[in-house]
Image 1 (cartoon, rainbow, N blue to C red):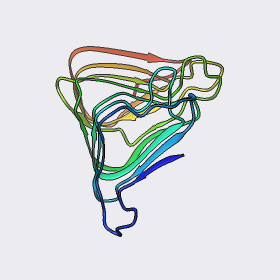
Image 2 (cartoon, rainbow, N blue to C red; image 1 turned 30 degrees about the horizontal axis):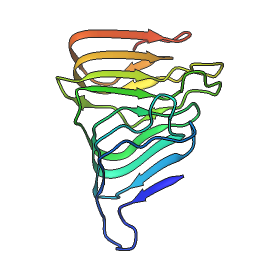
Image 3 (tube, helix red, strand yellow; image 1 turned 120 degrees about the vertical axis):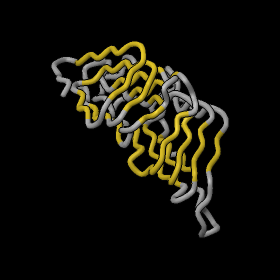
Length: 177
């Protein structure tokens, strides 16, 4: 586990800023945990990459700026439940919870509900790429340029405004509600 703790040693809430990419030497190892408590977290690059996926990503912060793709191997979650305000700072973003060829269940995408970035092309994949189980997805209010989703089922909890294209697929059997 790699832990970046903005609170370490000071007793105060601190900010965590990572300008480059965070990838795994061995796909799926390690898990990546960032705790800024009521501080902010900024990721300027990607978290995981194709072939170098992290085991999981778990962030706690008052605000988070996300500037690149997030990719984890199967069984690991992308967890933003403890982020109060999420700002996406890129125009192309992929969130993928299962590496190609992985045989475990896909991970969950947690706490990624409302997105307001009209220039964003968003791709979300919570399907298992191997023999494991796929996951469903909950998305809230969206204002995007384009949206591509591959998930077991999608639940919409707010209005969606998509400027150009929307591609929704369910694997193997799912629903859009």
